[in-house]
Amino acid sequence: MDADWLRDVTRRADLHGVLSDPGRLAIVEMLTWGDRSPSDVAADLQMTSNLLAHHVNVLAEHGLVRRTRSEGDRRRTYLSLVPGALGGLRPLQRRPDRPARVLFVCTANSARSQLAAALWRAACDVPVASAGTHPAPAVAEGAVRAARRQRLPGLGSPHTLVEVHRPGDFVVTVCDRAHEETAGLADSHWSVPDPVRVGSDVAFDSALTELDRRVNQLLPLLTT
Image (tube, rainbow, N blue to C red; front, side, top):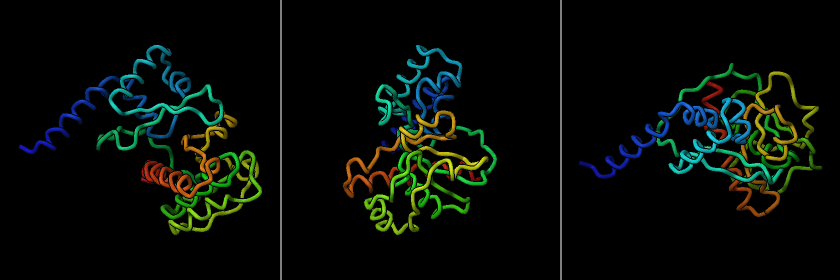
């Protein structure tokens, strides 16, 4: 008997056990779409804070969910799925209609939203745009270099959310500050650390890698 296979079966059996609770399964399904604050999850599921905390603790103990501190309001945390933690188990999804366009939003529209849009454009024919709540004068040079290293399509120039947003856009915030500033606008939120604050090529490459993972996770949910 293959020991690695047995360990994998045991791991998947444990996951099935954890997700056999309807509350925990609902939390995981919500997080497949993007990161959520505990208060938002509790409100959407009509769940008490104590019960939510219990479920999140169980999910965290089994390596399914992680908590991150907001880069905007430091009192706020976000829940997200641990990459790859479902180990081949994929919850059923309530799929929205195929969107007319995907819109990525961050504060300055100078790095994360630009890179996310470039990744989406390279992977899919669904139209895409990006915007910022407080656009910078220009795209960050680190973002331009990172895009070139990955041979992505050219990045655009920063634009304001007001001028870019259209009714029917599937909005993805990729910045905690923008998400908190535009409460209720986003269809999905990705809590991606700001590479501009660090400024190194490593930081921009790390952000690009995380955005690429998230794009590949969202893509089949919106297009198949």
